[in-house]
Length: 130
Image (cartoon, rainbow, N blue to C red; front, top):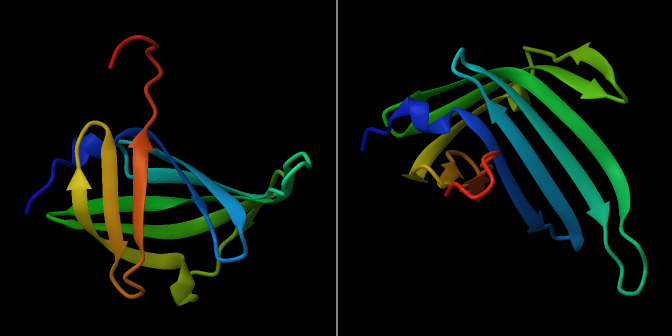
């Protein structure tokens, strides 16, 4: 299937609970020029106690969409508001995903190697306009 690249432009959000029972929140900004910024926040949630942020990491790089394959190349990481160049020799900075669903509201994709499935929701900045 061929998907419209323009559907990915904008801000996206996902939230999940990992194997350690920690909440992972991801915000993604995908720009028309092929650049991205991903922000990952790991939160410890314990019953009866306030949530505690354990880690915040931002990644910057390039993305693309060809037919039903979405790919990302991480070029920089931001930790404690300092930008560090990513090691472009490290294969962990290159990812490819098979798009399972893409529309104006939902982006569902599966990592080609790990087979892990992710579902992101579009963030609409126009309150009251669905």
